[in-house]
Amino acid sequence: MKVLRQIIVALLFCGALDAQTGVCSDKTDSVAPSTDCSQSTSTDTASDEKDDPATFFPHSNTSRYWISGQSNTVFQAHPAFHAKYTGPNSLLPRGEYKTSLVETLYLGFQASKNTELIFDVESAGGRGISQATGLGGFTNLDVVRNPTLGAAPYIARVMLHQIVPLSESTTETTRGPLSLAAQLPVRRLELRVGKFGTADFFDTNSVGSDSHLQFLNWTIDNTGAYDYAADTRGYTYGAIAEFQDRSWGLRFGEMLMPKVANGIDLEWNLHRAHAENIELELRRSLIQGRNGTLRLLSYFNHANMGVYRQAVQNFLAGLTPVPDITVHPFRTTLKYGFGVNAEQEITQAFRLFARWGWNEGQHESYAYTEVDQTVSFGGDFRGIKWGRKNDKIGIALASNGISKDHQLYLALGGQGFLLGDGRLTYGREDIIEGYYTAHVWRGAFVSPDVQHIWHPGYNRDRGPVWVPGMRLHLEF
Image (cartoon, rainbow, N blue to C red; front, side, top):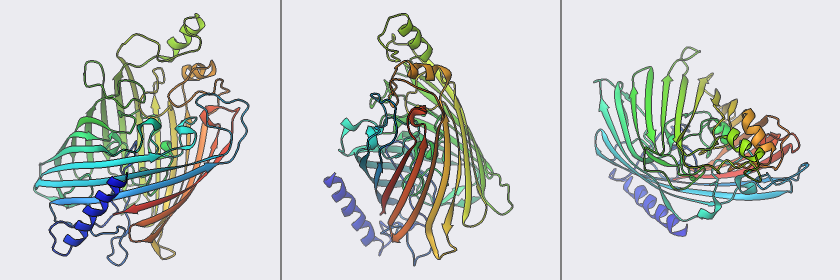
């Protein structure tokens, strides 16, 4: 990790020096999209005024090179809470605290006006409370769900981005680590091939997608029922084709799936496993003069997934000591789901968002989290009124559920890769989260955060639990 930090500082120092010449500097009007271990980036923006920069170093709007970095530290704790029983994958009822750290170095090169190369290096260290188990809506999106991987740096993204203009008219856009163009054709085709996070481009939301400046909960920053293709760290290989017009867009992605649930190794044989994702984006506003967007998502996962009902039947027939979703011969099965994602700007400072998601809930939760139905909504408010335009306060609620077969599997003692209390008295897992992000100086942000969770792991016999936290975000 020290080596990665030294590389980041050295490269960013060079970028700051080059800002005097315009050779290798980057000027930006927004905070770069945040990256984490499982998900994603967002379009959350900060100040566009030179007297109140939101990064430590300026970023050029014309350079062919992009160099930036982020460091995100999250401390979370919870007091002891009521639990009638505790299983191997439960949120621990005793008080505990944990700290996570994610550091990312973003590199980019514009080979031509319409061709870009992206290369990102990342380190994810620390731990989540209860080793990131016991909750469908886990409290920290930065946590890697396999603590044995350690904090050694790894390649997060290596991607070719090709823009195909379909119109002569252009529109200005904000440069960032995933797209270096300052202007884009109004009508265009965008192609991306390589390694990336599925949630970098699908199910994004400018109010609730950025775990580094906004909410922290998995099922608020993403649609919980969206079991998107990813390895344990949240990345995959694939290709995305995206058509964009003035008021709408359509994107399609074909991605690799992990070999096993929550696995780090991806299955490269497409006959054995793969995933299709398609999303329609409609840029329509309910309020004249304000931004509004509606996204309609569907996904289809093909992988060696078990079936909850069959696992229960095998247990009842005495074939396994407990229901075990992993005990089955290799077979490629299909899991599918849908999502609706909306955001609406109300005033210059106030925005709202909402998500709804559903998957068929018969096949095992495989790549993201153990949620089969979800609804979430909330909003944020910038501190313009009190003279702190880079500050932001946000509040959101999420309600998550699982299918009948999934419930019975857990009630009889089955375990998923996140859940398993040994028993279950089912109730929806309801979550409320609030944060305040304070801009300290240049690229330094501090955010107190608090979450309250009813029925952790969908279990009425456990909880509720408070999870307060503190986040330090550094933007280079």
